[in-house]
Image (cartoon, rainbow, N blue to C red; front, side):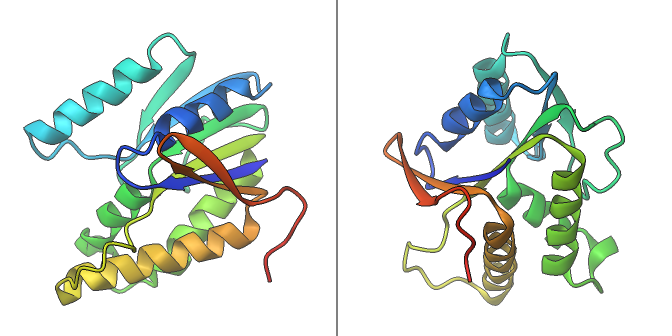
Length: 178
């Protein structure tokens, strides 16, 4: 199964995504952590997430760029990718990818990962509803993330938005988006 879990900041999406991964009957669970610890606030958030998943049977993999080369995952694993928004920002701001079609590259990486595991649970942020006008660089990042979210939602089995800690089913299993 391929799940996408989205929601606003502090909506409960991480906790819900972890519950999906834990409920998988896969033999092994991997947690792909994508947030680079740039500053003290970032380090605190990373510590909070580590504490949340302590004792839950995850093997943590810190991936700050492409996830296409993950050789440790296998067909009987559940993978929780936390989160696509950070992964996209990491790639967006890395000059090594400056001449790439980032939306296509990230989409292909995630879909390749999906093929190699039993369950993929991907967290992404809902950042598009605040009505704020951003600088052109941030707007470009948001457009790429939006395109990747759309591309992957078409392929996902389930898309769930977590609102105030309540999971709301956006896409039902077996129903393809047009």
